[in-house]
Image (cartoon, rainbow, N blue to C red):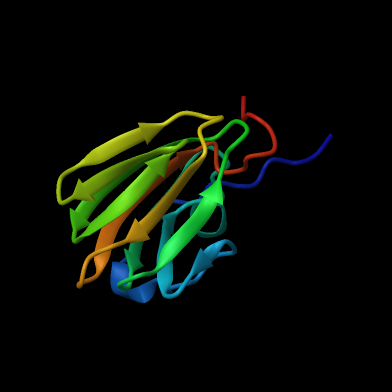
Length: 128
């Protein structure tokens, strides 16, 4: 039987967390993992802040079991859900259930800044 990772309390300054361009993200689509597997040991949640430079994007993809919430803080971009495009601006948010093809592109002239909450943290199997 595999040992579950030990969960760690985390109280941190966002400035201390590194920006990273994750696989499938392009052109300056950067994110900081604020609370998730590598920062807290959690397998249930992955909480990030993202900042996409103008024209940066995450390519179209679909999750098997993961659910996501995107909440836009600044800027604007096009969120594609299956084949439908939606303009997202500050204070717009969306819940994306598993099985929905989606992508997000900064179509504005400034940075697109948004929060992403994903659960479970791993798309391979549901956490119980």
